[in-house]
Image 1 (tube, rainbow, N blue to C red):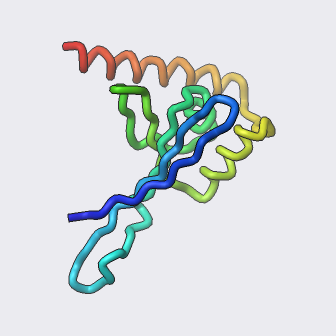
Image 2: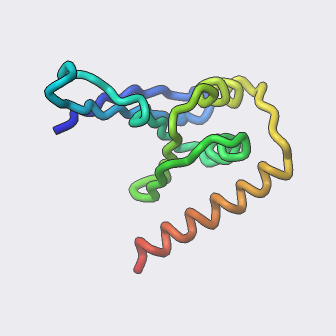
Length: 118
């Protein structure tokens, strides 16, 4: 059974929570705490940060709507740099891409909420 490790970061102005989760994969050939790189994920609760990351080409791999909306992004070489740029107000994004991703993410959320309500 895998062991889960978490790292929490609190974004000061909006108290945004992000969590990177790693699942340890155990087998006979590796140490008990080996971690597969592809299992790394960062969870974001800030809707507009999620929109920005999507507009910049980051991959959203998970979405939860209950008890709160949580957007899971696959870790990439640029993910943490983009999150930092967003928090420091230095991020630049194409406004049309940003607007398109707002509509797309709202549609995803609506479908998730509707599927839970049924």
